[in-house]
Length: 429
Image: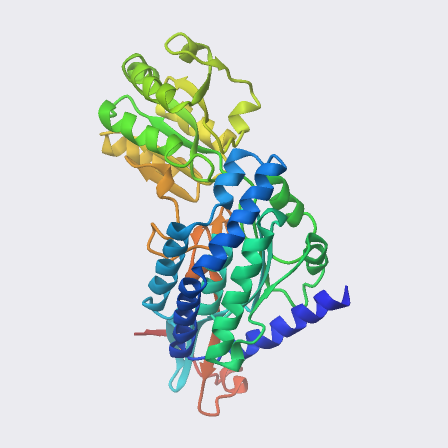
């Protein structure tokens, strides 16, 4: 598709212009985005109601419908998220390290934008605002593809964002582009000469499909199979409250708990209490044989331990030791977010050291794994990668770095041979 190639070419051209755009200009564009959202609030809400009506008519699942909603409250949250980015330090041009290689020969490691970011997301229109604002603050151009279920909302939001930033400065023209069809995005996967990073936000199938179909680096996670382990030394009142929040507060998101692990020494006290709260909230429990002796639950299958429900369904397993809980999480989990509830500092440290996840937590809900809650301003997504960026990815995940070397006519030949000069390799402040 020649049209998509041209979109990517324009995005690459814009990304080069944005590298030199001062932070004051980028912040003015962000402020314009926030103002435009407020100005178009009625139009956005109206478009979202159309999407919700269509989604219910075609039988979209309740979790996806909940994600699709974008009312005045969520618009307000998006505006606050944008304004928080305005007040944040510029992620571009930060000197990460300075080294004197020799007298007058100074090496700097400096942050810079990645370039062109391609994003495909499902259901959540607020993702369009989050990602656009984060890319703008970090000096990147972005190509967006939302799900068809949010077509009307995304269309209004994309026009609002585009017009807002372009009214500030022509350098922002084509910095935010919305693709129309999934076929267009599929073609984008071949354009590794123009697109520098892909971020898929959606179902496991979508993320795996993207990873298997492109040479472009992909940042994201295929699933969010999150655990909470209630240790033998847990405060039961705390454990009930935290585990209830981790499952029930918002079950349709990737950082909601999907499996609850409980030490056998505390299970008979803890499980009936938390199960009673879950029952009132409509949570379906699936448990191992030992769990089913204590509370009402259907049998959990081997496949269930790997499953991300995004719904009011929870696996429960009783374990005999901390090591068994850690082994279960590292085997069945998705390396997203896992938590322990305990009063034992040594046990908590062992858990947080040995669980191989992007976020590990102690005495708090897995639902805290979020860019806004981590103070990142917002997030483009949550990554379980072990390169570049991991966990909730905010501004720091949208910049890379370059080396800048400044000398005074230095030449390599002076550092070679019998009378070679020596490097000082001295760290500088």
